Amino acid sequence: MILLANFINAVAGILHFILMLYIWVLVFRAILSWIRVPSLYQVQVLLYRFTEPVLGPVRKYFPPYKFGGIDISPIIVFVVLIFIDTFIVKSMSLYAQQILQQQTLSL
Image (cartoon, rainbow, N blue to C red; front, side, top):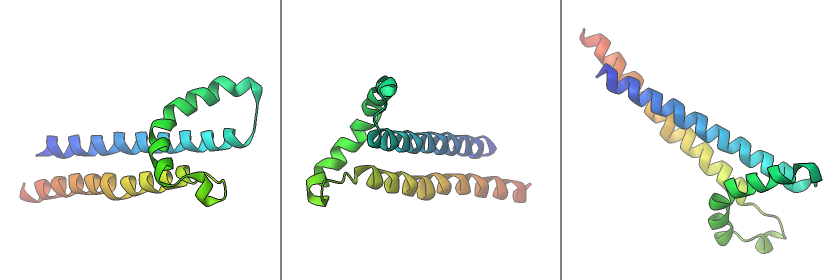
């Protein structure tokens, strides 16, 4: 059971890192969409290709023309990612800690 708990805890840590990294990628994409720096064009293209598969479907349900031309899809994705991190990943980590605590109590 200790191996299972450590495995769950490791997966939770990796998922947390990936989610936080993706949130920062979304932040950089949003910032670079507000300013135009020609030398960062390749970075903008890379960020677009990395984030558009997630933002595109959200934009279908919340098109910018319904919100005065403001694209709120990054905000919605932020909220969903933070929810996933707070609810699922933290629950996995707490579950792993509970398994470890039960294991030490039974010894």
